[in-house]
Image 1 (tube, one colour):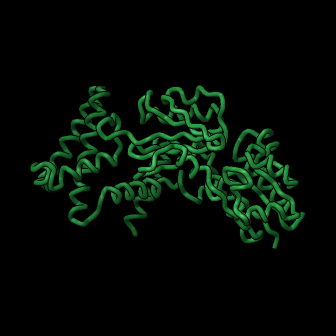
Image 2: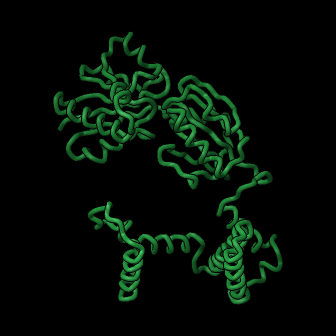
Image 3: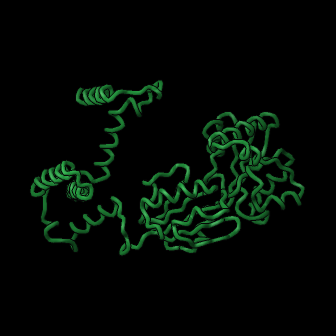
Length: 354
């Protein structure tokens, strides 16, 4: 069986390579580097190790998915030609290399893939950030993020911010959850550079690349101006706890049931009045009722808020077969609102019959 040796080049020179990696690089087989933008490249040349890079593909194409597919096509064609090749990437193949994932997903049954790991950019980034007391870390791919990706209670590491345009997208999304002057660390893993800057300036630099990472620290609990649903669940649990509020601890589903109707009516009233600020507040009060009842149910051993969320997500996906269904042959077919509600009702009827 043909063999691809996927080699993690780590974050330094040849001295930082594992012995296995160095032996693989010195084999007399074709060697391909994802990029020549790595401190090890010059040392490989000095040691007489010949290689070809894929920088031309990155320069020729714009869309990342197209770039990765072209690299995979090239690697597969070359291993079929030579029988055994090296594919080398900066850092670790296990973290952040889409080509490795595509090779494993698409060719592991027909090509032997041997992964020789190296130190990841992420581990180096964490060290460079200078913070070690992490209770919660989130790793975020900037190409797949949205405003819900970030957690104000966690340390957020945003990987491979390799262009000014991506930095701008990151900034816009972060500003949904953080203040404009929130401190961000711009870290370049290869140059060991760590620069502190306010959030609103993170897209004003000129040097970005695959080794550029952003680090955003948790917001101090006494300085939080924007909370998330986890904060709300913890507050309600604390209020129901032994050190919480006597009134909250006393409540039951029965005693609180009228509150749901009251809060729902106040939401409707705000909508009717067109009072957007009050609408936001009343939606929060209605959400509190859901969280409060879920916490009481959790204490009783029945279900918790995650069960509630999972159930409604499952229902939304199940009752939108025209959107999420695997059997949708043509995603370009546009449903009318009437057809969409018919699809909903059909799925609802199926559930009742089952």
